[in-house]
Length: 284
Image (tube, rainbow, N blue to C red; front, side):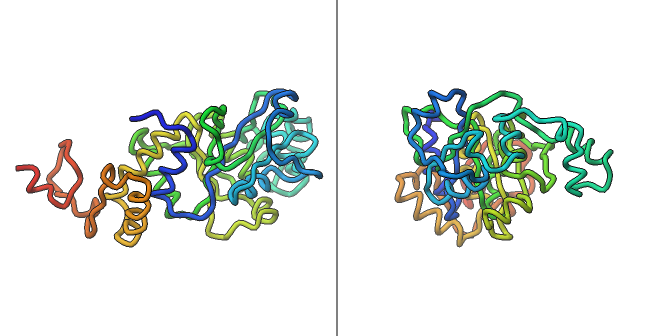
């Protein structure tokens, strides 16, 4: 497979995932000098990390550091600040009535993923805005609906197989579940989002967050494209076909109406073949 830039991958994914919100690239910033050199909007007053992700889904480029990060939980989850005793002991979470007893709070806090590296800040911007010469992001987040989340997951599974260690709690969704966990595990994750981000960012009730480490993004995108003909119904194929043609990819990924994996011959054991309505004819 060609070595595509993240900007090219964003365009290729858009041919298969017809969703208005842009994929977002999260890049860690390790020094004050690096932070100052990055051209991006710096909030005048603190905003929540998830709000910067929300802004990036509609085209804005944001940079945050400890001073401008308005959510203490996210500041800790991302590695901009070390967790204090109240976090480690889970007394803060228990005091906020997130758990019914301290033991459950401690059990959950010990299993919540935090970035272990110390960083100065984060760059949050649409994936399509990363230049070809720019350092790529560590994490890609895609806020979308369950159908497209399914398709992204199918693309990931196409190359990497079934992933069984999803981490979901409905708590600290964008910062821990969708940034720290995929970064630390180097695997995909799906988050149902959380009450905080749904309040501050006003995500639609039907939206979820799919997060992928950049190291596995290229093959995930390729997998989504290679499973379109098998998985998508005709109305979605019609939209995809138009986008593929506009981007010169229609011959690379031909789509057939009236066909999906449910119509494949049931006697196939292991045969490398081109998925097609004309399978029986091509087999001869």
